[in-house]
Length: 296
Image 1 (cartoon, rainbow, N blue to C red):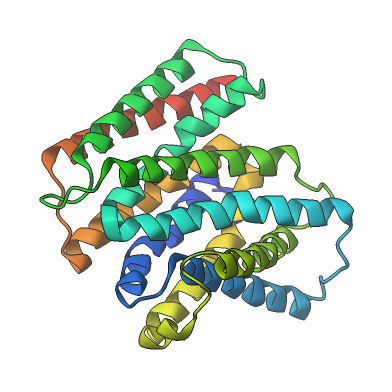
Image 2 (cartoon, rainbow, N blue to C red):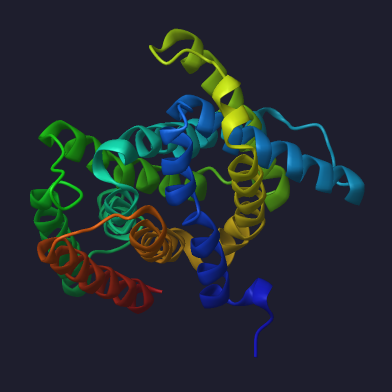
């Protein structure tokens, strides 16, 4: 049996499970008045501060070069700032579970981009998986969020941008991965950069940059920081072991947790069509995964 650090399935379950915590916690924070920018900042700064401390204790700190700095800024902005702001802005309108479903499209869109950029040769199974995945997304989109609380088409469209941003991040990190850098360094470097970008975004956005509502959710804030920091310890290892398309499947694990926690702990309810759409997406994800293994 492979150790956890070398097992893609084990890393996928751990990473996806920890990622899934952001949906219920993000909804609770939003209901307490914490803005999407502040909650995104909490995650990025908390992850960066925790992991840089771990690396300092290990004696692994080093001065980043120009390549690493570029990677930090671009990966932090594309992979963390953009999707997190959209997620936490959308959750109050779409529900934690519905927003989580958007993550399931990440593997399909990642494979689509991989084919377009000629990182992977297209095959019939992969193209079919992409088609079915998008069909499932359209079915889910028609339900427009929680049962009896339909969101506007604009919020549904914004939610659909989440997997696009995640897929772009998956592709970028693979293409520009600094060969000499360790996964821990890349994690905290990207999140420090993301935190800095979020300060600027907050200063110029209608939300502003007011952290005072965090006082109302101290436990949730601590849990969010610890779960996110733990997730990124495994995240970059999964990128190395599994590759970008396999990595993107953590969104499906996270979505399952988001749906279940949304219904059990947050009182959310979704119609039959939402579940049908999620099942169709699952079939598409399975096909794209199979296509990836055939192309390896």
